[in-house]
Length: 256
Image (cartoon, rainbow, N blue to C red):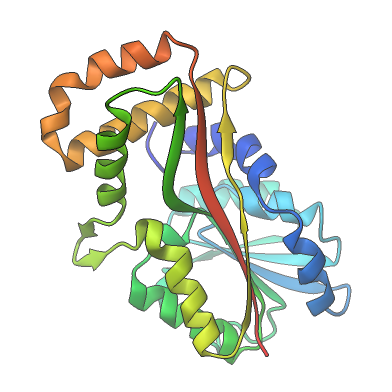
């Protein structure tokens, strides 16, 4: 499975739903008025965030689903009530584009952006007076049980991979929430942050295995010195009925 394949997004959707910090919605609701809200979901994928939030935010009548992948957008628009596909690069969004938008959302998004992109996105939201809810950004911490001597070097390599430079873009990876929080705060917005960890174990064996293989693969891509031990590590891990806590953080920003 690839990072943005429909199969991977479908496999992770129940874990995402369980992990998101639902308590932030209490604060969010106090900043929203009306019952005919337009929500713009960034990096929509197949619409997981819109499906989760739509069930908890009944005033959201129209979802502008923004993504660069037209195939994923087609799936999202067909499965999200009120969903309207918007095929574009989210890095181009301005405050004018958000005019009339009640809320901006995104899930598993900030860590694949750059510092400039999240700064511009914060400015667009604040300029439009639009609250923003970004869920499930990685923070660089993974806890695996039982422990293994290779856990630490693999984790370090994976975090470096998350911060790699792709086509001239220096990805934020685990620094994303801190960077976005600072950008909103500089613009006078009130920022709320909450943990949103994935908890994977025998109840989600396929997701755990796919996540673990992807985690090891990314670490080895970043640090090829780990490759000779990777297969043995995976065999050792997967035969031991492991559990993993993959730490994320959710961020809610409300403009002044």
